Amino acid sequence: MDDTILVLSFSERTAPDVARRIRGERVFSLILPGSTTSEQIAAMHPKGIVLAGEEAGSGVLDAEILSLGVPVLAVGHASHMMLTALGGACAGTSILHRRTEVHYEESRLFSDLTDEERYIRETQTLMLPASLRMTASGGGCTVAYADDERNLFGIQFEPERGDPTWSVILANFLFGVCGCEPWYTIEAATARSMEALEKRAANGERAILAASGGLDSTVAAEMARRTFGNRVRAVFVDTGLLRAGEAEVVRDAYAALGMELAVLDRRDLMMKMMVGIRTPEEKKRAFRACLTRELAEAGDSGETCLVFGTDYNDRLYGGRQMREEDGRIEEPLADSFRSEIRCMAELLGIPESVRDRKPFPPLGYGMLAMGEIREEKIEILRGIDSIFREELRAGGVMPKLDDYYPMLSEHDAFGGGSQVLLAAHTRSGGMMMPARLPYDVVERTVSRILESYPSITHVLLDETPTMRSAL
Image 1 (tube, rainbow, N blue to C red):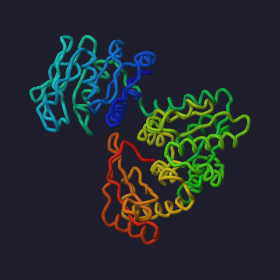
Image 2: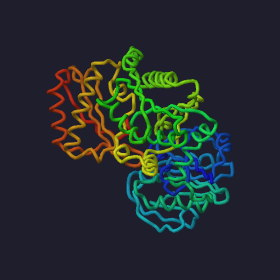
Image 3: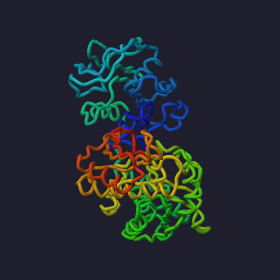
Image 4: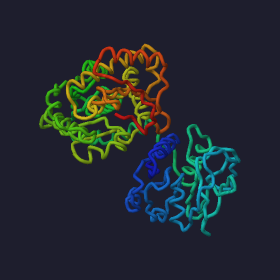
């Protein structure tokens, strides 16, 4: 079974949430840029397409997508884009940030739904061409429309967290309109993730795994162990940019999997490579080049496969998959969300202590030190991070967090010395939301940082929602 729904992203907030909800219905979904062409989509043979849009004016829709004969559901601003492509028009805002009674007409998309009051961020006054009919109304305007003959559906409101209406709408679209079969279980996702590794192993290849000790790389390691057996080695590259004692923690985690871990000390090399590099993208490119080269050089002529624990967030927000740039590389988790990987870990028998580890990529402190990386900045960050971690644990906050970290800038905004920004997040749908830290935890953390590091003049707490972890 390979039923797939494509989610074209015109909104970094809406697209991941829709994709996760689709997978929650046991149908596989892939997020693609809104700029994806009809030719590219046709080559993928999807069962359906969701256009996920939020902000007005974001992206351009290839109108030929609507003529592929594939059902399309357009959400939020994307419904305006689809309407325009179908010969309709939008004539100004009709509802703006208020609750309104929504009436649902007879429609396959709204089967089993009853009229309801719901909060709506924004709707436009829609001018529908003859080919479309109104399928939902509210506040005296059209909230949703459809071309029943061509299976094209537009809804002006986006899904909300825990929104039962959207669960019904998606299920109706997936199964009633697209004719999908529910097949994408965690067992199926795990098997799908291992396919490329199994093919390489069957060809007699040997592999090196890039170990970091985090959840993603450990799951990738267990998959590689199960496919390659004793023909895979785990290698941990110590970049000098990690938390104190990280190598020992990683070694213990891999020992629990029955895998020996080789540790490569590349701290001096990494610092030399980072001289003069200041931007995050430059740092990522330099680090990736160094890591790939070191892993390749650590292997022998028979080890032709490099396995990385890249996850779906890395793929979506970190650029192209590395395997697209280097044919030696396999990323078995590159289509998997973190929540799915955690379930895979449980299925594969990975210890709970590893499953619950907070993410901290190998370039961690390199991304958390603003500007050029220097050893003294890394040491300050490592000490501050230890203080923050100790206080979060002492305050009982740690189990509630999805990630936490400090960031260090060279100069603060007040003309003094260095400035620290503390961040702690919990995940909500596709968003990373600021965690509500107890005041006494924040107070103790700030006090200890200022006492321990006289060069730090200000400590701030980040209260900004983000689409993903800053790491």
